[in-house]
Length: 240
Image 1 (cartoon, rainbow, N blue to C red):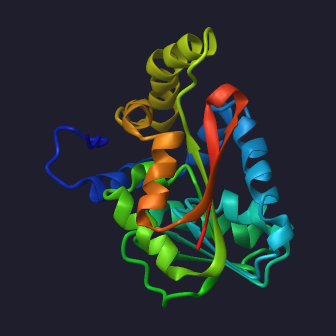
Image 2 (cartoon, rainbow, N blue to C red):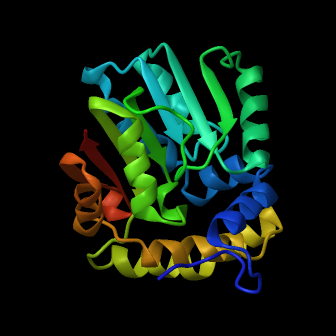
């Protein structure tokens, strides 16, 4: 089942997701940290650490947004990180951030469609994504293209929301996601649909073992799932 941000529009999911992120781009970083109580920063640090022993030199950050995950990945001391996203608004905010922090010589942000990556096969040592695969129009196609551009032996690290299963976290999480988060999101971002789409997209996303099966189906090996913070999100690993 495909969930889209704007149910009253005829555009496909990809176009709608790009529009949504363009609409909320100026408030996105603030909202991210506020709505997750800052835990998203810790999650990214943990995800990046899983690539430490691999020492990837060329990294691709898919659905890079404003570049937060790419900036975190600089801890791995790569030669270069390329971030791609379908939202021009998010990339614009990301470029401002990189310039301000004098990191634009290490991280290059460019427009890019995760399902039609404009890179040759076997190019990157690692492909990373944080909170982006849930927004793919065609999940398998996007993951297969990530695999294509990875070097043999290269790894993917995917950070994504998941659904807690134990009491009382499951109930508290569902209440926060369904009633509180959309209201705060609407108030700050001025986009009524963006933060209603978020919980809906998490509900239909195949998390845990189901997502590992999709990774394996497209060809990833040695897949793992590492739940974080009572299962609110998870880190997925796969190798080419």
